[in-house]
Length: 112
Length: 110
Image 1 (cartoon, rainbow over the protein chains, first blue to last red):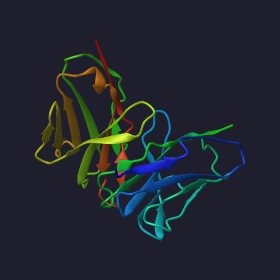
Image 2: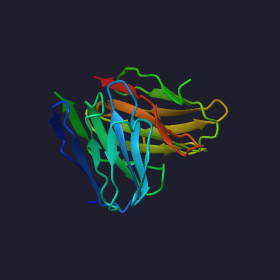
Image 3: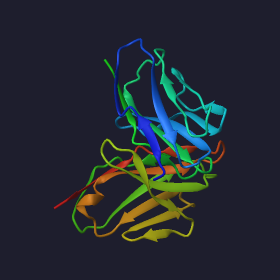
Image 4: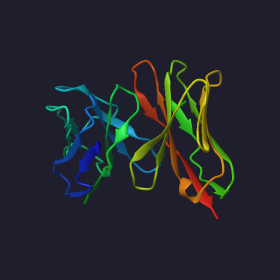
């Protein structure tokens, strides 16, 4: 079955550490996105990529980095510069830019 | 004014009731509209796209009112399994970006 796989599902990090969240899709979608969700807030766009080897900052990119070396993969690194990284991170993809999104199951990051 | 606004709820309704949610958007150039459903601690899943003429999928009906800049979701004959948070998503034109509302929580009770 086609879909998006995110890993790990749960991650605990000490302050000052970088962590990388994996996102892999086999839907053959060109566009991929990373969102962050905090309690009581809507999903906020961190980074997006419309095509391989290209990506753009979203609304809250500070403290995050991404790469898009393969169509299927769009990993997100949460760096130590991100001041409040504890959140639910969702990766998504779409066939057309800014159209119907398919989400992965999410990665829940907790900073200890 | 927020780009996309929803009443957070919760809406507590008895099983079998009809319930409706609205979602207002600020950018009149918005072109695409969607409703997603999100269960607790899970990922959002597409419930339905919203078309200009309105559309229906079983017990769910979505409407678009461009003049007043809102979309609505009507759920008939509510089931316990409909309990979830319903997210409104708008393609806010301009930068061709999807903006999410904060969601409306629905609780269907016996």
